[in-house]
Length: 141
Image 1 (spheres, rainbow, N blue to C red):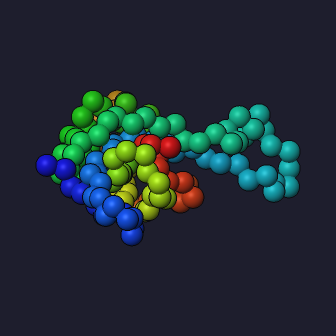
Image 2: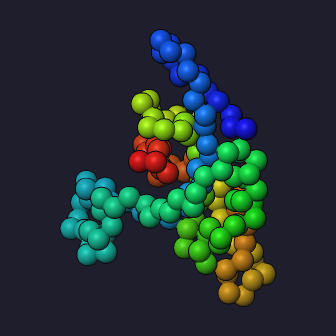
């Protein structure tokens, strides 16, 4: 059974089911335009680009989403390309309200130091990264 959430004071008082979306993200470094020098070609190339992301899918419970993340289902790190995974609690349908950070659970990829190829590791819970503070609705929007 799906978890349900009541939204505001809608006249029909319907309850909307929620799902848990799982997405991988690749942190990018952003360039501030208030530099005291001319930016390099590499710096210009990344300006205005949002982090690469991939939504792996959705499940009906947080427990299932967390199990998929902790097990690195489908290689969510993609050989260390993605640096973070996010589980978002999302209302089914077309959301008509802004998403909230309290509905986000973040993980960061930690490489196994004993792996000579640096591909093995595991996801560990972390705080919302600074570079993502002004962005919400990663999986939907």
